[in-house]
Image (cartoon, rainbow, N blue to C red):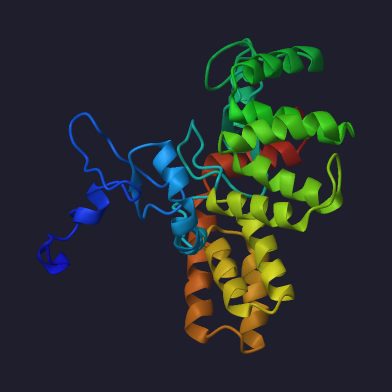
Amino acid sequence: MDDKLIPEGAESPAEMCCASCGIAEVDDIKLKKCDACDLVRYCGDTCQQDHLSKHDRACKERATELREVILFRQPESSHLGDCLICFLPLPINNKHVMLGCCSKIICEGCAVITRLRQHKENLQEKCPFCRKPSPHNKEEAIRRLTKRVAASDPVALYYMGKRHCLEGDYGAALKYLIDAAELGNAEAHYHLSILYQMGKGVEKDQTKKIYHLEEAVIGGHAKARYELSSYEWTNGRFDRAVKHLIISAHLGFDDSIKQLRTSYVDGLVSKEEFAMALRAHQAAVDATKSPQREAAAKAKAAGEIRWI
């Protein structure tokens, strides 16, 4: 059949048959796509293995193309997403709080204002999200975190790994961070890139460092994208570096817009590109602002609350 006669979006005859043995997909035979490239299908693992030598080169080339598309796709939001209380985007400058009882992440505004209200009304301190009583000491907080880790909560796994990093126990940290990364936690991928860069708990490995940076970037991690742009810049791949900076700036990352400004002065970024990135950066920053968050910042600065 002429491929031109196949409706757009429909599968070609080749995609309806096993690439190795040629058997067609019928009710009792379901074909699965190659996980790496989506170019061909197989009726089973044996046929996929038998066809590997013929497909390997095309598979790797297509997999690289697909990863490039994903790598340079503009995320809808940062890896943090929105606050679960006020539903505004979470700032990427660490002004957010992980709730020790349920491992949910909310903005400082909601956390601080809730705690101030509870103090003012002489109420029991409870989590703003799950309403459980807040832990009153470090031991209780760790016990609850451990419980969430046992439930394979990716956020809890990441924070447990981060805790072990701060204590210098990189071997234990590595296990938790790997588990969190396998569950798609972008922060875990970013911290793994640091461990591989510094050789903490593992041997230094530039390839694995870049892999985890890229995985963090795909997950919407703006700082990881900024660092990846620096890596590309160092290696003379300026076009790729600029792409990373623009995407990171769109997420509201300040260092990226500063670097784009320098690149614009140096003639490496056009006036139109810089102007568009500047507007997008400001819009992303403005989207994270609210009167509640400003009030919380003032309360913290005045020393009214010190628990964060």
